[in-house]
Image (tube, rainbow, N blue to C red; front, side, top):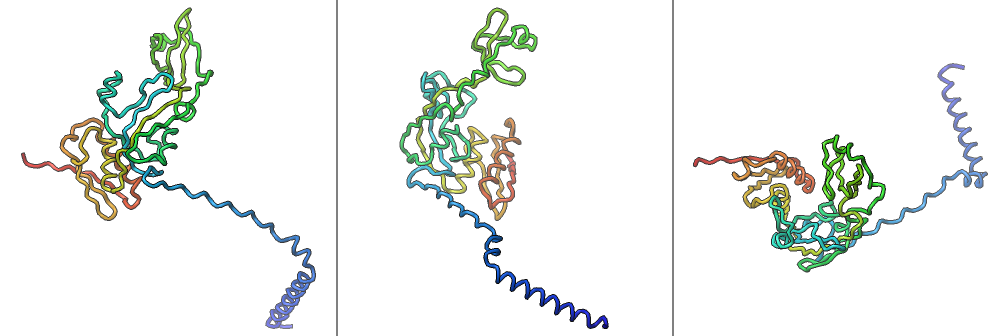
Amino acid sequence: MSEEEKPEVLEEEEEEAEEAAAETIEESPEEATEEAPEEEPEEEPEEEEVRYENAVNKGDFIMVEMTGRADETGEIIDTSDEELAREEGVHDEDRTYGPKLVIVGDGYVLRGLDQRLPGVPFDDETEIEIPAAEAFGERDPANVQTIPYRMLRSKGVNPVLGAEIEIDGKQAIVRSVGAGRVQVDYNHPLAGRKIVYKLKVTENVTDDKKKMEALIGRRFLGIDTGEFKLRKTKKKLRIGVPDQIFFGENIQIAKRGVAMDILRYFEGLDEVEFYETIKRS
């Protein structure tokens, strides 16, 4: 037999073998059923996120006036009201007061408060209670320890009753001092306490330019955001920096923070550029 005839014979044999295999499968339906793969269970559809009318929704940019207190003692832990802060003796000269930017669901406030903001009506004063576990956590007895007095002194720490101290990079409160020993508490000072917030949503920010200005104001505290010049092209945002921040502290850190925030929330932008304009006096 010549080599040219071989492929034709092999092809015929292969065709006969395939037909025999097909006939065998057709004659054994039970066997075919047993080898069929099991059907995967259908996945349950994801629950559709609830959307609220005339109220806060997840992802909203909102400006909020708020005051948080520890439920047991009534002490203020956070407030945007400068007058109230002065009245209660908790005013901080280094802090900027007024409505605070909150992007709902992104951790701008306590986790327990963040989770309870959706559904809060606009412009109405609302009271929200946050259990300890969702505020500053429950108290953990294991975080209360007794340390020799001389060991703390050797680290340059002066343990005074009630003082907040730092031990090996960890913050602690001195609970007792005596007999050469100091009891320190590594729990957060507000651990184990329910927190109650009274708040009011003063503005739901929907305009892109105002959102950008709000993000700028979050980093450049105490400066009128209208002083920043915003010029947007297709993929770039140019921000003109006002004169009053030229010599401020941590300007470069603030610029980077603004740029990262804007790129995070405006996916159509690829670049943020800052520029300064100096005019002839």
